[in-house]
Image (cartoon, rainbow, N blue to C red; front, top):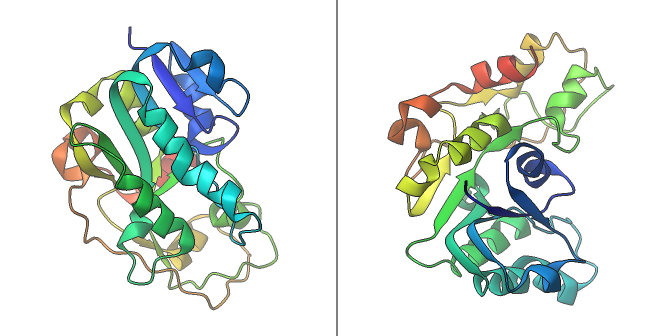
Length: 228
């Protein structure tokens, strides 16, 4: 059985994988020295400091660049870096830029997964559960477009060992986009939408929905499956 080392296990995808992948070890700020001489089949690097306003630049670099460098020095067979489709934006955020910087630390046999918005029970509060809970308002416009995937599909990707078939960049995305106003309608939400338009695109370099029919799903179907 594959032995996984997973980072970022306190929330989001890292926590979901840690809870659902057998034989996995979670890395946190306290146990790096205890595991640095161990061997792993696969490292899945999910951890990332996403703070919008950087208050400590040294810590931000350590969380997002230097940690990745330290992980690359461990003993493993496969390294997977969890990135984001936001790297494709014309005007990338600091978050997307640092994801791209970290991608450059990968080697040719590593796998970079550029993921779209992930739905799972460990995700942080976002527009989907705000709409579901009928919060009074959110800042996003109904014309915003999103690509939704399921965290459980990423678990399947790792358990089935599909990931071992790939190196370089793979876009872990669904096969289409959905407008936020349609998400609101599906959820029968009374939440008032705002004016900020989040733009996405389908100009991906290597989408998983084309590489493997198992993951060829639509954003709306993923949304329906999560909120069923």
